Image (cartoon, rainbow, N blue to C red):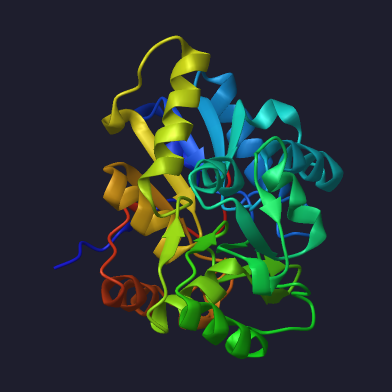
Amino acid sequence: MVSAPRRIAGLSQIASRYDLILCDVWGVVHNGVAAHPAAIDALTRFRAGGGRVVLVTNAPRQRRSVFRQLAELGAQPESYDAVVTSGDVTRDLIAAAPKRLFHLGPHKDRNLFEGLDRELVGEEDAEAVVCSGLFDDRTETPADYAPMLARFAARGLPFLCANPDIVVEMGDRLLYCAGALGRDYAALGGRTLVAGKPHPPIYEAAVAEAAKIAGRNIARARILAIGDGAATDIAGAAAFGVDAVFVAAGIHVGEYGGGDEPDEAALARFLSAAGLGPAWWIPRLQW
């Protein structure tokens, strides 16, 4: 039986319990168009009280791209100590992959391969696939890739998924991510490799980053994860053995309605059906 999470009005109610926050970015800190000022304020206040904040994102690029995006959207650097991306940890998978790779995703994600001794080739010559997303997530859906994925599966190509998210917020829209293609490839029987949330490598990298900054190891009982993705942020936190706050007014809001005031019974049913029991939930992150 999954325990029902408790609603909190703000992070200030529980901040004293934790020394480190592992915070999702897209959907919590910003929506792809603008930063959420209340979330920025909450993280800044947590740091001002002596806590550490590592932003943990399934962005399929190296972290320097996220630094630029955060600045452009208005997220102040005072709100976080470090960033760890799915792209950062996927580079380890790429380094262990066959040399000739097909990149499935937009050109903006090419820094994923910088400094690695790998060759980007056409589909016919590839020994493995690295997927960072759809070529055009504004107009395409996973259905457009069914024939291509079938060809990859027929050849038995490993499929390295650099972003496990299925969808992401872009303003008031939901756009498909690499995780949707990884899901479909796995359904075809294809071998899919993932290092981002909810898998351990990204959490291990984030905690190591925090320990380096703090100059000490931080006990898992003193770590809090925050995110709006049930299958990534919340499931990942549970598997890693840390508490979590579920941000309800995110990508799953259509499952239980209400926006900033969700139907609490429907929300509880959604989390229970997913087998998830975060310690806390909040409509949007605030202090």
